[in-house]
Length: 271
Ligand code: PEP
Ligand code: MN
Image 1 (tube, rainbow, N blue to C red):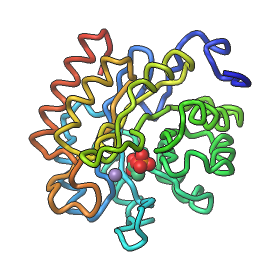
Image 2 (image 1 turned 90 degrees about the vertical axis):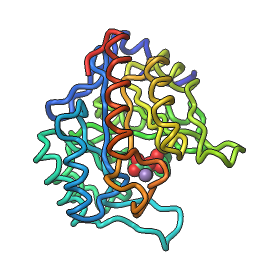
Image 3 (image 1 turned 135 degrees about the vertical axis):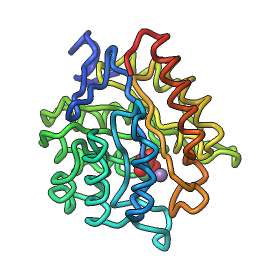
């Protein structure tokens, strides 16, 4: 690919990204989990109970939600950040949360250990340039209709700003099949792992839109060479204010952690 700087020619060795005390990349396989959005303190207490004593090393969760409909739950904003931070502190693991707009960058940075740039903002170039200047690690999600090349250019926006603590996340792309919200593109995982030294993780929750697909897709992602998986969980998925259909329940989450950890270990990684 022409004009790409942050390729295997730049670094042959895989990069390890460090978020607080959590490492991602090389032998470090990441399990990340949390709610689609922080909703209230009862829900977050349920999330704590699910994650306690689990191998999950990164809490995910949204406070500023980029929703397709302006009438859908938009996230709790600052209150959501407070709830997410509290939960991460109780669990003693770092927090990644999305920053949707430049105007929230300072606020979100006060609470987050890593900044997520969501699918809808993969091509928000001013936002990418700005987070490229930040000292926090960046979790960059692939645009839902972005080619792998466009995704790689988006990564270059961040890295060329000086921020090489960058994780790429495949989260599914648009397809014609209404059974699934998106189709998880494992081609992209294989290609990104070959072309770049950045850790590549997979989000099978948004990648399929269905909780029953999360486990098989997580296993497939690990087998395809991903450096981790990030999933949505909820203490009562049927009452979730967003993305309940794709959120793992307590019992399914327990099975997921067990099976995915086993496979990662079989592949020579640590979880
Ligand atoms: C998310 O991970 O919270 C999210 C909104 O996902 P995406 O940007 O991939 O749609
Ligand atoms: Mn979601």
